[in-house]
Length: 407
Image (tube, rainbow, N blue to C red; front, side, top):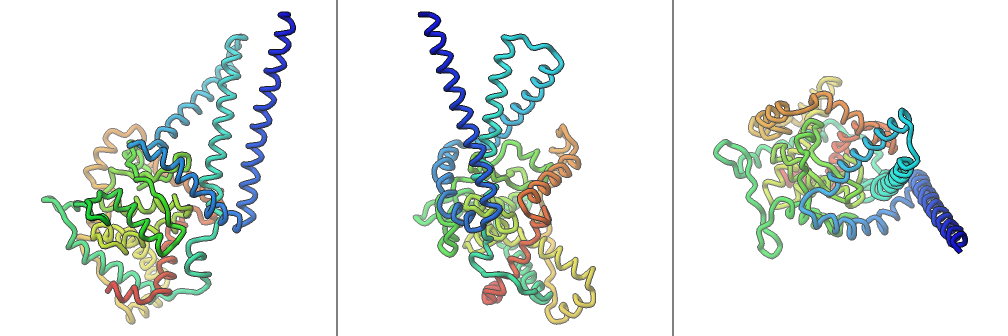
């Protein structure tokens, strides 16, 4: 009887292990199929973003949104600990004899580790990798961009942005030290909204004109590791494994609105950085909130200024001819003082207590981002961030009245 029960238990255990292996293999196949389909079919990626991706935001995104802290940040920390444990146990297993009792622990740990890796691969595929192969924002709403843009057009858009920055720098609220202060905005029912809820409201409003932006938006969340983000020169993160929009709350406050809207744009399937920059620009600058409008214009000022400087340096004669037609506007001192990433006071505090050198962290982060973008099919890597200028030119060529309206 004992032998029979033992054999039955053994057989049951084998079947259970066999079922688990089959499930694991099925998920591996699913991950591979999804990635292959996305790489080879824009139509599939578009269909996925339109019909499946919103489910994760509306369910999992709402669940993680219940927590006042960034769930993704804690998951990332737990993942780092798990990887370190796996590395340590691997070294221990190789360098020291493992007893039978300890062997059971090793097997269970690495089984858990394997399932964790597979889960991360599946979530990243569903919430990130597929998105890289969909139609772009400009293809969806502006049509194919095959035209060349003149330097005069660039100067006109630059002038409009510069004029808006100059004007808005004079009207936003400031404290006794001249630092920008956000006093809140008014909701649809007359309620007072903080910055996070204002960003959500503006993104929903933008969805009326651009349907893919319609839907639920969770509240953006500040990160506990904002000091470390400063060392990476990162303003925000979209965590695919928690469906959250996160921002660096140590950076200068005028970066907050544009960053919040940028990260929320990722939650509607726009994973490209230049597109998220552009969507954020539209959400902020089309609002009636001066603080958000100023943040939106500031967010593209440097990109435009850099392209204008490059034209002056590399094609000086062409630049001078264009500048004779449309003279570039001078950006006021206050605007440049507002257009900073982190105040010097905060930099001194961060560098004074940092475990790692900021230059090292910044270069490592740049390399990681560049590799990640290229792996996902963006050939120019981090340079893609500056493609927002082309989107601006395309937009204002399509709607030239909006340039004149803002002057």
